[in-house]
Length: 117
Image (cartoon, rainbow, N blue to C red; front, top):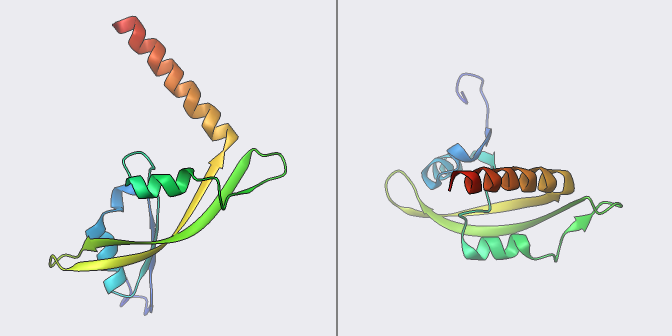
């Protein structure tokens, strides 16, 4: 794509399915960038601790939304197995409506599971 359209740099945006170390290493090694999503569940303890820490979040006036950003470095391997360091800006947010929707889904699932047991 870079050659076809004479682009200097590409920024890939994708969901968590493409968020593998090798994929991100490939982009960085080709002087490209990325914006990808990542679930907190299953992430490293250090990452989860930073996300859950209230420090740094900025709330809206009604306290129904908050957002913060921070930088992190993490190591991964490229296609050749060589270790590289990814330097990333992380943006984290919380929204009351999303939180309520997810809680409702969990309650429905728990209700369904209790009927099956």
